[in-house]
Image (cartoon, rainbow, N blue to C red; front, side):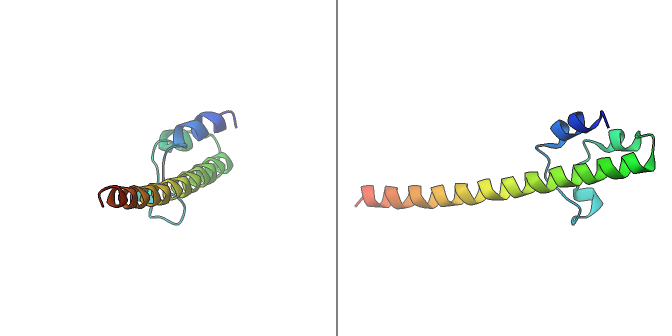
Length: 83
């Protein structure tokens, strides 16, 4: 499992998960997963990739919500200033 950390770091910014269609999952680790010597390792690496994708997708959603909140707040402040 020495491939886990490079895989985890390589997929950290990717955003997809097991509930999505395969073409929507991150493909950064496909070669690493395919080259794993056993089916069990391929399954574990795939599971890890999917968990990382899920975490990244969740974080992106949180950041998107924060951006929307800040944009709304900024618009309100601009309106107040121009009264």
